[in-house]
Image (cartoon, rainbow, N blue to C red; front, top):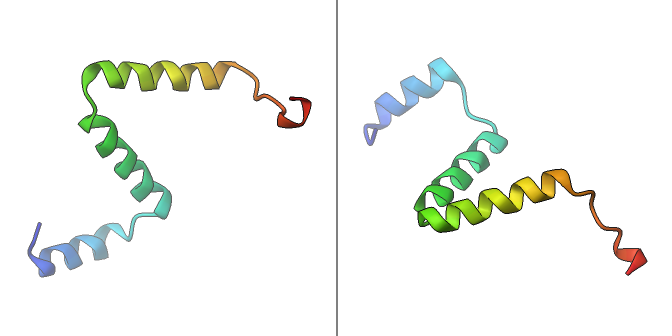
Amino acid sequence: MKNPTYVAELQKKLGAPSSETLESLRLLKAFLRLAPDQRSEVIELVERLAVEPPRDPSLS
C-alpha cells in the first residue's frame, strides 16, 4: 500500500479512521509483538482489572 494514489482512493471510499481505531491498531500490533507468555500475563491483568473494583487512592 505504498502507492499514494491507491491509498487516497481507499481513504476516499472508506473515510478516515478515527483516532480510537488507530490507537486500537497500535495496541494490537504491540500486543502481537509480545512473547506468548507475556501475552497471557497481559490478558490476566486485563481480566483482573475488569472484575476488581477500582481502588480509591484517597483511602490509602
